[in-house]
Length: 330
Image 1 (tube, rainbow, N blue to C red):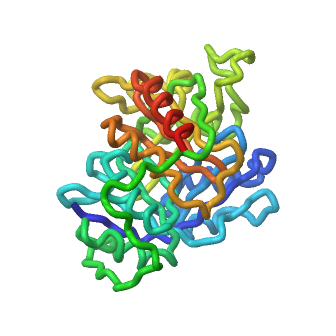
Image 2 (tube, rainbow, N blue to C red):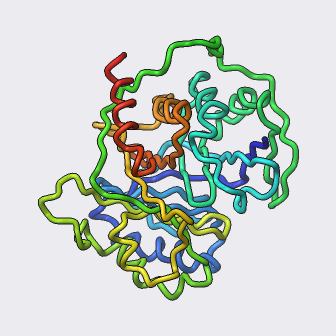
């Protein structure tokens, strides 16, 4: 398999809920008027706490300076696993559980922190730019490493570096899960739409992204405290990805959103009691490795404060049970 190192230099930032209005103009431009910008990588995820944005340096210029915006102290690069070659954006999604043992676990073993963004199309593993030599050294034995330069893929040569961490021998003990887990009551859809139809639903999407103000959709009563606000929009190299709860999808016209043949619904596992930060290594591995062992597919979305895994609805009870067993077995 190939590991593509994309050419985007990315910023990860948090926008406070009370500050979203001053950023709305720039965010709308990035989401709906991308042709007016030079941005090629943009993702916006709303959680109950804040908005997380992942955006390339050109896109970041569209946002105002504000005390309501906190930027992670690093430049990030996106890695993408491509099976059988071809363009990353039109390949079938590999799934975070498919790359758990080949990418996520080795990086955790070498004390390299990752930030995950699963989309409808594929999975992006974000690493700090300064960690790239060690990332390449760690993964070069398993993957053909390619860098994307001016839209073309060229061979990337691993540097003979090490950060002093020795890869554990086979048979090492499983990683304990050290952060609290919760599962909201919402059921989620991971979907997409044709960019040509974006103008027809732009007003609706703006309302969902910026003005809905919480779980007021039908079926979400105010007494349902376990129903959380979560919405993710990504526009990456021309491909749109959407993650939203089932009630929100019902607001869209028929035949606009892509659906899988099974019409699959996903349940969320939310990781973290206090904000996780960016320096701790192995959080994604703690969740994705047991899912990979059980062959349970999953999407994984990291945000500025917490992490989120989406697993098929029918698997949620066994997933929660298995993960909580791991968390108490430490």
